[in-house]
Length: 334
Image (cartoon, rainbow, N blue to C red; front, side):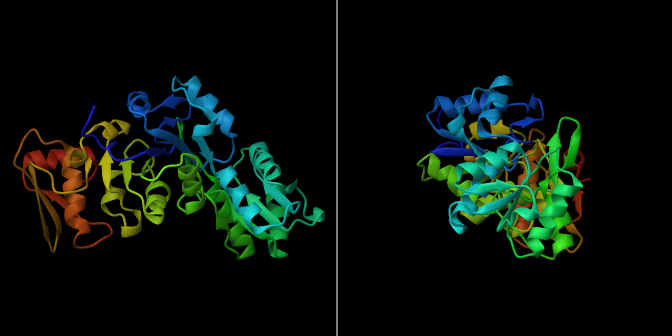
C-alpha cells in the first residue's frame, strides 16, 4: 500500500486507552491498522499515560486482545516518571511512591529506593494511578511535599476511558494533592515531553507520528514535541472539542479511528475538503454541502480549517442546506 499517512514516518506512537482499546475491547479498526503498520516495517510504540501496569502486562493485554505486542514496544508514564527522578536525584535516594507495584518497580530499577511513609525521610514523591490508593497514601505524600520533597506525577489525565465509561484518572488525584500542598508537580507523561522523547529514542526514529484521542495529552504532547499528529474520535474528545481546540492542542489530521493511518494524507488532513464550503461571519460558521457524497468528517476538517485560521474557542455552527444540517447532527455540532 502506498500514498498513505504512514509514508515518511519511521515510528508511530500509539496512545492506548481510547485509541487502541477501551478496557477489554479493541476499538474498531485497531487490529487492521496496526497490522498494516507492522507489515510496512514502520516501528510501533505504545505510549500510555497509565502508570498502573508494567510494560510486560501492557504487552500481554494487547496480545490477549488479539493484537500481538512486544515488551520493547511499550513505553509507560511509570518508566518516564522514574527516569525523570533518576536524572534529578543521586542514586539510592528515597522516593515515596503513591501508585501501583509497577511504579514501585520502575523506581527501584532506576537505582532509587521506594518508600511509603513520610517517616522514611523521602526526598521525592512520585505519583501514578492505582485503584488501591487510600487516604493514608495521599496524606503521607502531602506531608512529604509540604516538607520540600520533589514531586513528580506520572501524568495529569483527569479521566480514564473504560468500557463502562470515564473513570477518575491520575490527574484527579494530582489535583487533590495540589489543593492540599499549593505545589505543582513535574509531569513525566503526555502532554510533557519525557514519555514521547523516550519512546522515539527507543525506536531510534527520526520521523515520528503521534496518534491519540485526547487533545490535552496526546495532541498537546505532539505539539510540545514538534511532531505531527492524528486525532481519532474513539475516545474522550469529540468533534465539538476539536473545533474549539486552542492552538496548543490542534492535530494535523483527524479520522474516525486508526484506519485513518491507511488513508491518503490529504483525505484526513485538517484542511478545506472537496464538497464542503464554510463561511465565517459574525454569527459563527455556516456550512454548505455541494456534494451529497461528501461525509461528515470531511465537513469537520473543513470547519476546523476555516475556524482555526480566524479564531479559536467554541463557536456556533449552522447548516445552509439539509445535507450540511445532517452532517452537523452526525458530528454533534447541530
